[in-house]
Image (cartoon, rainbow, N blue to C red; front, side, top):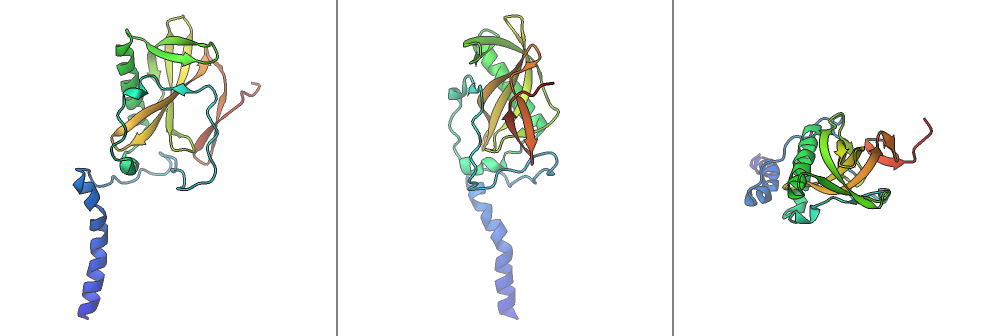
Length: 195
């Protein structure tokens, strides 16, 4: 009977041992996963299907100013919600705008120029995720050129929070350049269909 108690009590310690690396780094224990309906499932590890490249994407302005993730293996512990994504995008845009005279400068490949934008709204309707694990939200801007723009801003999970990766001008004056299609909890770009 004693060998049963020792063997089974050691099994109870295994979950605690898994947290030791987190404690050594000063991390916290993992937060419970949000319900599946509020956050799309993460892509399967080792998935053979590579995500399609984003049409019209350019590197997020100022992303070179973000330090590399010191613990990429812990990125999955960053909770991503519609609110945390919207707040990260707002903070990022405000920081970049402050560095550039009050304007968020985005390279627009279609116009082949940089456009200067002022943020008006970050959409909070849904949590959108790409197959490669990046999250994005649409944000409305007023352009210095007098046009309105809907820009999609992409962020990836890191152990330190969310970091910007790419931006795409999705709409100019309400006219979409492409559509988003959702399949099984992940989003991909599609050609604009006749409306």
